Image (tube, rainbow, N blue to C red):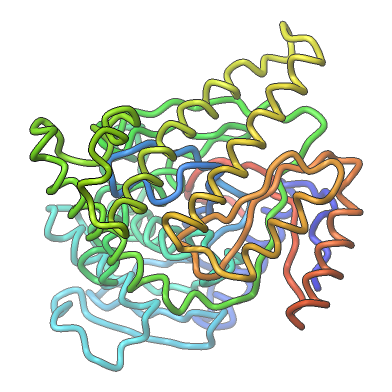
Length: 422
């Protein structure tokens, strides 16, 4: 098991990853890259499966990145080498569709990005590219969104042959573009959260995002003596894509039925918990459970953000800070319970990790994060309890599953960027 709970300098880690991918690019193409496009993964503190219901979310960008080293070509071809899966692929920007059946899954994202960019009137150039990263694939930390975002920056930068300064408005537009790639080229009807946080992440801040209006606010975390720890079940999320689309359909069905009594609604976001309780018995049992979870989760996100905003260490007493953190932990625990019981996207391994975590003194809250059916949990842990947390989670999880989990401390990072001097 990798020991990643130890604190490392973010700057030194950045320097090492940029140097490594530069070296691999030179080995592959014979000379250095011109620039490196880098996009982070994310962990969602609270607000799961609410984004595609026009609801609220509060994710953070993490210090795990998808990196694409790039050099512009003189022709319209895109030649790519994905180091982490030891695969290569190339295509022409003039013949993006139909996509051949044998096309690797990862390369479909780059084809999709190039296609959507060109359809949007953006200038796109052929490139040589080497792709690598440390966002765990299939772990629910948004490796696919990071790939789409990094690819978008790679194509845009190569097309302009210069650094492209992006306003926050530009970034929200690019997030929507990357979401289209997921919908049209990966077949996953995801919401906008993953792409948005990968582009707009800010160090030591959560992103309170309204997934309908796309209005957002960077909320300081002020975790004080606590840290964010991520535990990877190492269970492949084989059901995640198909069940994700089913959950979305079930939520839409609930809205359609409830519109008979609440004619102004367009999504579950529009329904208060009080109104839902009036009419929930009109829904089929399964639809009722799905809708209940989403409506309650939206309320939890708003409450969690309110708690975070109250954690101003310059004006609050230690007791007030501690009490607010306990409140945040309770909301995280309730979120997982709803995902397990009503939305039914958890799995035994995720439940086991949260149970172990909650039993450790110093852990204030723990929940699954991501689409579910495997992937990761996120916990808030007192720094003095990190070693105990690591030891107990690793030991007890392995004893009951035979699997060694990956456990690492999450450093909250900035969003995607392009590096020119490395």
